[in-house]
Amino acid sequence: MPYVNIKVTEGVTVEQKTQLIKGVTDLLQDVLGKAPSSTYVVIDEVALTDWGVGGMNVADWHARNS
Image (cartoon, rainbow, N blue to C red):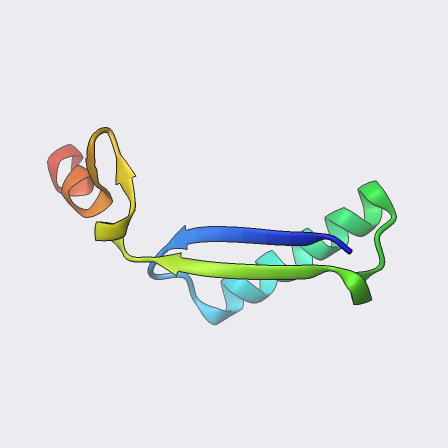
């Protein structure tokens, strides 16, 4: 029973999430032979201020590097 947790920053559409879930499920079936009915995919959206890179939150990092 595969469990995949995808973490993304905010702004991902429902359509994109649907594509991610299907793509990951298909990949696990193709590569590992796992049944889609027993494959779980969870997508967590993380606020830009709750995600860090380069010693700062991503919102500040984007502002600084834009």
